[in-house]
Amino acid sequence: MFVDQAKIYVKGGDGGNGMVAYRREKYVPLGGPAGGDGGRGGDVIFVVDGGLRTLMDFKYQKHFKAAKGENGRTKNQHGHGAENLVVKVPPGTIVRDDDTNEVLGDLTKEGQTLVVAKGGRGGRGNTRFASVVNKAPDMAEKGEPGEEKYLQLELRVLADVGLVGFPSVGKSTLLSVVSAATPKVADYPFTTLTPQLGVVDLGEGRSFVIADLPGLIEGAHEGLGLGHEFLRHVERTKVIIHVVDMAAVAQRDPIEDYETINQELFAYDDRLRTRPQLVAANKMDLPGANENLEEFRAHYPELSVYEISGVTRSGVRELLEAIYATLQRVESESAEIEEPATIESDEPSESETIHTYRFEPQNEFEIHREGSRFIVSSVDLEKLVQMTNFGQFDAVKRFQRILKSRGVDDALRTRGARAGDVIQIGDMEFDFVE
Image (tube, rainbow, N blue to C red; front, side, top):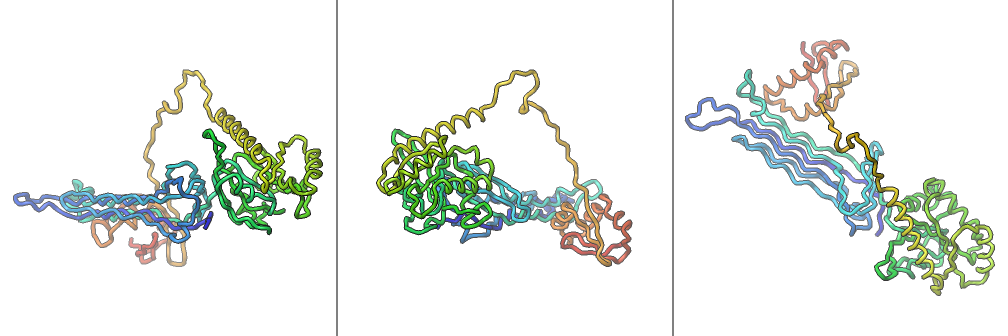
């Protein structure tokens, strides 16, 4: 089964909790704090596996959670970090955040990786909070929660060549002739409902990947017919082969077919105008094909048109050789564009530039009122709530100090907060106390 879209849930591992402990060795009075830090939670990482060709695995498993970091231990022993969760995806996978529709990554190369959910850091043990004022703090942080999000995965097949054309023009037959692929072939429209890949071997180490893409209809760029299910796969191909039914078996005009296909391609993505195109004039073994071909060539004298028959295999070799030559030209032009120009300059290069980074705490927050309830919105403060153990007196005092130092208390008073009003930060609610 070919699956090219999936929605999944990913969550990085939570950090391990910090430890509250003290030194208790004999003959060591007032030994002080000895609680270790928690370990970091594992990341969820996508890695491209060239052996995969579909997102079918995500049809049956939709939740991916990395392991939690180990809690801190006594004697200042830190917890172990959790192993990352590695998830294999096929080349050509586009990863989007389901909430924002932001593209997080476009995974195309073998071994390419993308961290889609970071694990949380481990909570600090009480040793970290020792100070001159409080030499034996009775508090430790909880582990930071790992990132969690829903992702939309979209697969766009990676093929050198894409076969396009109206339904039943012979694309599947041509693919079955030139490669070992076995697409479904039948005498009715939309026999092919999903992309089919095949490898064409011309000998002497020359080969390329060809894709039989589902047939188009007019209005496909607006989603009609198979619409976007087809068009998104065309974007990846380096060369487009128009397969035209030159015998007009379905009583369609080959010239109109060619124009309609191009209109749909360009309406979907205008960049396809610059994609090299060849025309495979198919079904030349049938009556009427030669007359239609003469008219087609007269109408498009600039096009490279190759006469073929998918059934008798005549002209197929010449078409494949032309495709390979076009691919070689495209790849050489791409290499020239990507090769950086050598510029002599006394200015330091980008890699030699020294960048200075300064830590700037994120103290921004917003307050809005709902009746007698004041809701404080802040990513940092909400994370602070999650990592604070409110069952520890020292942890509560630290939480209060942070709110005061960041100006939250003063901002609440300015907004009209009075003693006894409910303050909410994240999932935590508490009373405002003067």
